[in-house]
Image (cartoon, rainbow, N blue to C red; front, side, top):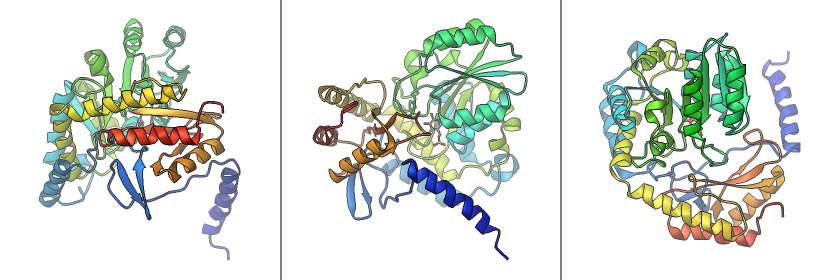
Length: 393
Ligand SMILES: *Cc1c(COP(=O)(O)O)cnc(C)c1O
């Protein structure tokens, strides 16, 4: 008798062949070092331009020490969801610390940004309601919309006029607008002031995903909402602990009532084991560093401006809006070839392909970090010049 595992194996082989034929098969490649400006992959030492560790905190000695000390005191696992017996003092401390950082009434932690987004949306809206979602929102928001079973209206990227028309024309019990603040694959920012105004005019709630803005934007590093002074006018501000904060997990800064509702309703909160205490302690330390030491953020912004100028000098479009710079090349094979050439020059820059980005917009995506030196930034620009990457060439 044929074991059942061979049935799925047949499906997988068929699908893998189709992906390979389109240049869309993805494979893993392990680092043998911490995150940082320079990483080890097998025998190669490469300058890393693909990490979201924007402030170099993933390997920070202070953050490691905070994690190690909590690891000693609380052990590794948390044994259960927070509602059962997994809730520990470090979770509560971190939520209180993040609420101060975000100047919010309350904060609720999640195990990842993906868990937060797929948990929050279904907790707030359902059948009879409508969610208005930017066309370039992160996949976790897309999935949160789907799981909510609310009507989903996708509006053209950053198009507030189109959103306003949709808000006018869509009958629904509750209306919720959701957007990335910094768009993860393009590095541009949402027109947040206009979105806030549109929501206020229509009695709609607004949820902003600050995954790539936390630690990077705003005078204290609290994100685009802080930078634009609209914190108090956004219902839900989601941030991750996994990018600039260097760890793992996510949170939403919101009202006490919403935070309380999420404890009962957000399925990834209710039905998943609590975050390890060591990660909570690491995040608490990282938030202290982000809020009280602006130097790494200033260094990062120095790099952002230097890279912008350098890309423009190469004839590539670039704006200093965030730490993310796409170099759009078109077909997957072009992005893969460019990534291979850069790798030969000692740079790790991953090619980003559909379905992560729309068809025809495969790209190199450079992420800058405070851990880089200006030498690293110049190395990337020089390699791009030698490789001859330019739009449409
Ligand atoms: C990375 C990312 C997430 C997911 O966060 P994780 O903590 O990695 O699960 C959510 N939203 C956006 C915009 C992201 O870029």
